[in-house]
Image 1 (cartoon, rainbow, N blue to C red):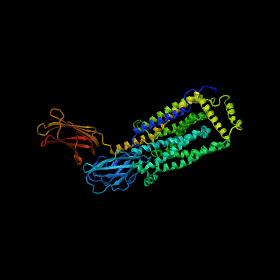
Image 2 (image 1 turned 135 degrees about the horizontal axis):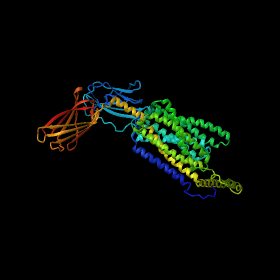
Image 3 (image 1 turned 135 degrees about the vertical axis):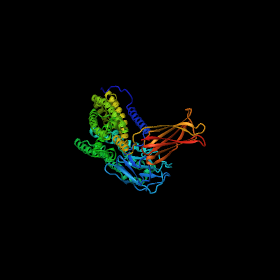
Image 4 (image 1 turned 30 degrees about the vertical axis):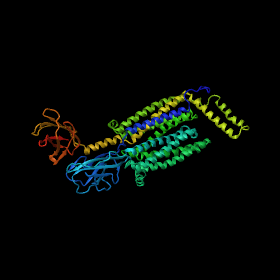
Length: 640
């Protein structure tokens, strides 16, 4: 391209501003979508069974309550609480006993002796082995069910405003890691001249600052995130000490220490290394920085691997180094992509050789990502049903689709890279003209004051840089590459958000195993909805009619009850009082009273009707049609 080619298009200053605004808007949109539809982090360990079971009615008070989980958990003094119908503690308030054996994870709490009959609530909260908080509650009854005054918070562990801020910090930590590691690798491997470029320095330093700040926020919020959910507890020293004794807390502290070493690396990279002019010294320093920086980057990546998904489940000893390699490949690809975007928009000096070197680095990163991603997918999903039927599997499909889109856009970038030349950087006669311009201050230095000469030199340098940038912006190949790289960066922002969601979602394999365990230990026997029709006659005026009952799903556990009363004319009939009771005579269970609520004329309903075990249940229905006219009818139904 000729040096005299006219400049056309938007201002070179407006273009980076527009690009930054586009990316900022995209980040805001991603956060809006994710946070609007995201609840608390999904549990990575799940309750697979309990004794007594959820909804069970036992004849005598048990000595203890035990809970079984799908994987290892960390518990504290109040991790399992048993509350009587009035809301008082029915357990001894001691730390849960570890009753695990073999591959079964089980914890128990002792109960006080002489507990009265009624419905008891078991509330539990713990920390999954991969650092995520889990919680839940269920009820059982001694003797017969009763009313209970226990009101549990509807907010799950890890939810609320604290959970949202913690989630944002997690996303920011991944973003900072990508910019820090990917930007540094881009300078060392692809464009060593970038060590002297101020935009590149700012990119890497901002990545370090973002990762450091996000890590500090996560460390402070770790206690309320896994416990009370209150921001004020972030500065509770006792809570912070307890966090430091956990695996996630140790990982966060280790990350902060490694970030101190990373700060020294940055200082050398953009200080001593940038000023080195001797080629041999620069090569030696490059090798030293590459080895030292690689060790620090791998260490920071390991702080995720040692405390999250890779550290639990099958083949953890293989999964952790694979996870480190996966994170480093992500950083090299996406962080290098961000660096290339900044270099193309903000610096006039990057040449085609640097772009081609990054293309090779990106290709190698994709190969590593494919290999490690296939292994991680097999390990975390394990079956086609888990891939399509669990939230983790569905997010994984979205991630793979985004990677495919990213590779498609990268293919266009590679085509622009193949056409890229450096003729626009050093046009014919440009060097000679620049040399003449640069010598002008020296020729006039005898007649111009030193301050004025320096000012003129700075002005000429700015003009020269502006001319070079205009020439570059007029290059259609370079403009095409900038647009395709910007598109890649936009997809990468969404991809990073989906990856963050994956880290806070229960793996598909674990979810299916937990569901299978729950089915084996607590699921009811096969059954189906119960439909009964029972005629009645109270003996009084308008005392004849029919009671129709639907019990769904008609199995042990919680059921929904609907009762309809039709008069002798077939029309809906209201009555002053309607009561039901369920009795399993073969086991001497019951009668269990049920008082439905009137929903509409002739229609009553009750939710959460507990059937403790399968069997041939007798359903008694009492219908009162006046102050003195009532009747009790009954019918047997096979439930469960």
